[in-house]
Length: 408
Image (cartoon, rainbow, N blue to C red; front, side, top):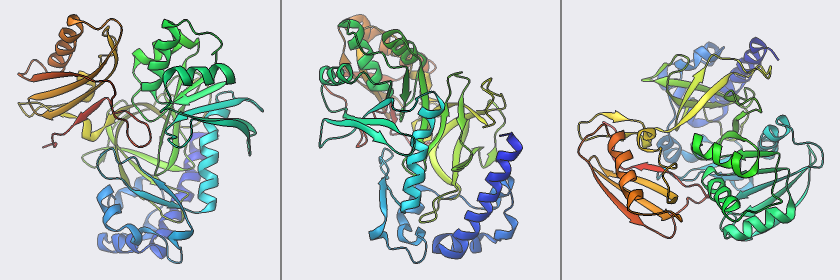
């Protein structure tokens, strides 16, 4: 569909959800009244600026006031966020919303070429079982299987060799470990035609490593617990297509829209959850929109890239603020299997490292060199801790950079 047609569908859904939220959701009824916002004034995306933001603290504080009148939470499906910011949330959905989320989950694989009867194996946080056998799954009749990432790398590789899935979906940090294992052990018979990355920052180094190991490129998917799948990368790799039907993504700096190619805080308005609407919700991510068009011909607007979380920006000793990307290009350093960098104070960093085969004194020197360069040469202390395991979040994610320093 053309851009203007997609925008009109978005606007119609926006008018519906804002009126519904005001009429039936106590939290938004009070929020609109307190801001002097009338639902009849909300006609298109530009009018969203008339609505105050909703933050994670608001959802925690007013949780049951955010559920529509007449809905019994005990009869709802519950989706819990990771709590990576220390603020885990429970989102309530009805049966229709769950069906829609399931369709969104299947949409990127179908769009990228996963056909009838082909299999997609997801490797995620299943602690209760190591493997769920793929089965036919309506409505798109793809075979879907689940593998727990808490298995050993050897066991995961064994399952993938046995299954020979046409598509794999998991976190970039695990893909990197699998790719290294496949190349070092010269593992054969794992040749998916599609690989989808979710939940973490996808670096260029990881892209190249995975392509070398598996012979196929990565398609990035942007999703979250609150809204489901929101954007995906097609096979042209020109950016992520923002799916316009389930939500509206704004990119803001100090409350104002950024221009194409500029970094902005992502603020999301959901358009389909009538059990627990979230309008102008600050998700905590930073992204870069673009006015470019993809050669695939889809009318969806493009998201150039996800930069990271706004709480992962670093505050240097001089109070200069820099992106976590400044200290993050460490995956090319020899001897690192996996790592996590924690900014504990403005002038102190802790780097947790799982050693690779080539780990040595030069690895430590290079880590310190990268971080000091990323900190613009300012005086910082860098401690390096060798560990056997880096803790994952409840959903299996590993955050590569964590800042414990509050932004000024």
